[in-house]
Length: 179
Image 1 (cartoon, rainbow, N blue to C red):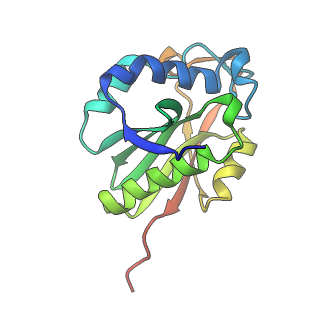
Image 2 (cartoon, rainbow, N blue to C red):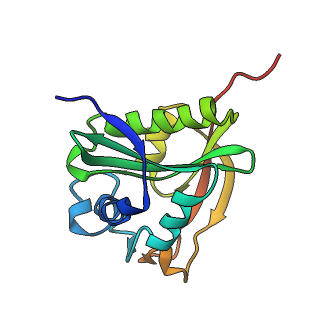
């Protein structure tokens, strides 16, 4: 098995990224993996126009994890309010649980810490996603106690099937605190 490689997305990658992200979170295909949101949300998971802006803006990178040129996973890492922000984390459903996600999360943390010198990584997770939150907690993330409303009515984030969705902010220090 060849080594996993990482690269930054370019605009030509947008169709493949939309397909990957959708497969990881929406519809029946997503139910092959454990990251599915199909019971909570319908509609799109990622907006191609937002994705294009994220690819082009400064201190923002869409990371791709590939093996033999085949897209296996992606994540968005960006600078936001003095910290790294991690989002759009997607692994092909048939590969979830095999270490690819851990590898791309570690690469995103490396970019934020080593290239951008950011002190922490933050993310928002739908707060009823206990299994996903536990995955991040095992990797050093902690609940900050901050909750954010789900953007009901903005179909760029999907069409909710329930009325109790909200985001919880998780954070992980990336650098040792100065003594």
